[in-house]
Amino acid sequence: MTPGLAFFYGGMVRRKNVLGMLMQNYVVMGIVGLVWVWLTYSLAFGVDWGGHGIIGTLHFAGLLHIDSQPVPGYSGSLAQTIPPLVFVIFQMMFAVITVGLITGSSADRMKFGAFVVFAIAWSVLVYAPVAHWVFSPTGWLAKRGAEDFAGGTVVHINAAMGGAGLALVAGRRKGWPTAPMEPHNVPFTLLGAGILWFGWFGFNAGSALGANNLSAHAFVNTNTATAAALLAWIVVEKLQNGKSTPIGAASGAVAGLVAITPACGFVNLLGATVIGAVAGVLCALAVSLKFKLKLDDSLDVLAVHFVGGTVGAILIGFLGAAAIGGKNGLFYGGSAGLLGHQVLAVVSVAIYSLVVSTLIALAIKHTMGLRVSEENEDLGLDLSLHGESAYDFESG
Image (tube, rainbow, N blue to C red; front, side, top):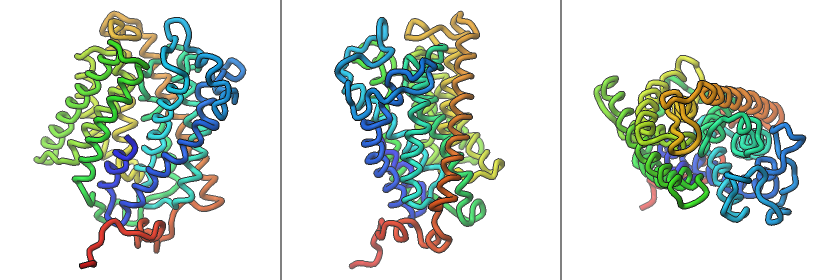
C-alpha cells in the first residue's frame, strides 16, 4: 500500500518534486520497519504501563518475550489464533502507512533529513500511544468501548492531524495559493489509487485476524463503500464544475476506503453504502476548506483522511450492527453510549496528534530547520535534495 500511496501522491505534485515524494514514502518503510520491531510495537501492544491504558512497557522491545505469552488483552473472546509474530508484522503495516500519509500535507517543501527525524519522533511519541489507546484491548479508549476495526482514528485521523501540525509549522509553499500547482501525472495518481484499493482489502479484511465470516464482511464492505464514495465524489464535481475528473475519481475512492476502515467489521451492506456515499460527498466538499483556513495542506490529507476517518468513526454510532460485529448503533436499537465513545475517540486522537505533532515540528524547526531554502524550493526537491530527475527530456 505504501508504494501505492507514493504514486498516488507523486502524481499530484509538480514534476520537479515527484522523486522527493516517492523518496519520503520509501524511507518511511525503512524507518518504521526498524523502529516498530525494536521499540514501538512494545509501546503500542505491550503490557500496559501502570494500568492506565496510556502506553505499553518495553517488555517486547526488540521482540523479546514475543513467543512466551499472548498479546496482552487478547484473551477470552478476543483470543488470537495467529502466532504473535504474525500479529507484529501485520500491525507494522499500519504503522508504516500512517507515517506515509503525513507526507501529503507538507509536500514540496520539507528537508529530507528533517522529515526523517519527524518520522522517527512521530512514530514513537504519537503513533505508538494512540495505537495503544484504541487498538490494544488494554488501552483506555478500547476499554471504554470505542470501536475502530482497522484504523479510522489510529491511522487516518491521527495522520491527518499530524500532517496539519507539520504543515502549520512548515508554512505555505512558495506561491500558494495563487501560483498554479497542478498535478503533473494523473495516470500515476490513478495507478496509485488502484494499488491502494487492492491493498486495502488486506488492511481491512485482515483486521479480522483470520479468514472467516467477519473478514468476508469487512472485505465486501470495503469494496462497497469505496465504490459508493467514488461515484458520490464525481457527482459532486459534476454539479460544482460541470465535469467529473480522474483525480476526483481517485480521491473519491480513497475517501471511501478511509471512511469504511473503522467500520468495515461493524456495519452491514447498507451501512457500508451509506458511509461511502456520505464520505464521498463530504470529503469532496471539504477540499475547499484549506483555502478558508489558509492552511497549505498540499494534497488534501485533512479533507480526505480527517473528514473521511471522522465520518466512518462517528457513523458506527448510528449504523453499527451487532449481527456483523461490535454493538448496535442508534439505528439498530443501540444506546447513545456507543456514539459518545466514538466522538470521544475522534476528539481525543485529533487533539493529541495535532498538539504533539506541532511540538515535534517546532523542535525540528528551531534546531536543524524544517524546510528547504527558497532557491531549492524553486529548483525542486528532486535535484536539490536527491540529485536526480524523474524525467529525461534531453537525451537522444
